[in-house]
Image 1 (cartoon, rainbow, N blue to C red):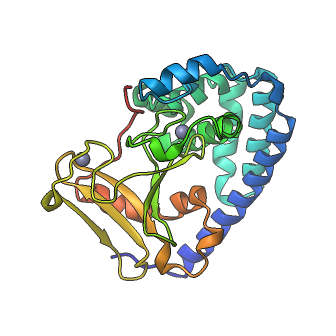
Image 2 (cartoon, helix red, strand yellow; image 1 turned 90 degrees about the vertical axis):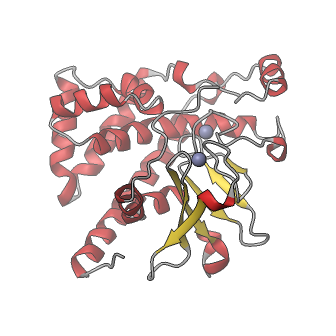
Length: 280
Ligand SMILES: [Zn+2]
Ligand SMILES: [Zn+2]
């Protein structure tokens, strides 16, 4: 069981402020993004849908370098304004200037969860792997979300019954039980897509034997559950919206960061999340 003391709470508030600042940076970057460069190949989409494949391959994306580098600069200068993240900002900036950190490559490596690459780079830059993953997500998601947006209406998410994102093939980063009907909705942290999936089935190995599926929660935060599968030893953090009064304003990207303590608990018990997107 975990509890927040005063120091944790002030840290949490700083984290939230940083998060909100980075959300502004993201919205501005999306405004600047050349939306005409988003080409949707309808024939390819039809083909993929017929094969139950996800619709886009973000791993092959070439994001405009100038746009990306401006976003990188803004990310670093936002981090610099927060006491606890100054060091990280400096290391990132230095790494970029020494040509050791390439934003374009980083986005791809984070998307593909290339842990060997990320570990080696984190040693080189004197940073944590989490710092690099955070940056990679902050650089990639604005573009991935715009692409996913364009595909809305091109397919019916209700016909999708897989445990990975229908748009980009990534495993879910979080889930929630919908307020109105209790349906389980999975969420992709790369493109923001949500899709429904059976509650009593593991989204990773499709195990549906109830005796090997369970969830736990902490005393303080009853609405925050961790669903675990004892067959594949994976977990997914899940928010029960029916236990939240302010569920309408729920922001999963923030919830994912804020509920790190649950990841720690699950990992202590020997569960993990899939490192890479599904091979489909
Ligand atoms: Zn996705
Ligand atoms: Zn499983």
